[in-house]
Image (cartoon, rainbow, N blue to C red; front, side, top):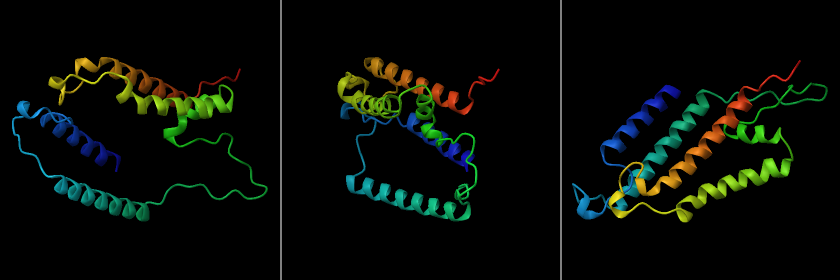
Length: 166
């Protein structure tokens, strides 16, 4: 399944790149000025959502989630419980200090930062719309790259903890 998703993702990136990006350039800069209607776009997206939901339901019925058996009285807990992979960075932060600061405040600040990037930082110039990594928006690109690297490093630290035993 992972290889299939990687293949679909690679094809999608190829098509987006070949078709000129995800932002629509100004009408005078477009090769083909025609566009599909909003109704057609919503219809296609709804159909894709229904098909994806059906596929996920089929996959979840065929391949059940690997959930541990329920905890009963007298059974021992695992040595270290792990968060899902997308929360491992938060779990790593929680190992370092105060649960409110590292478990609530910092994740909320990350979400606010990500949500605010389009509003706080300058937008690309109109002639740069539709291009990948426009030069007029380097600050946002750099900030996002730093944030992604930090989150990846924290996730890797949580996945492969450094042994502290002597």
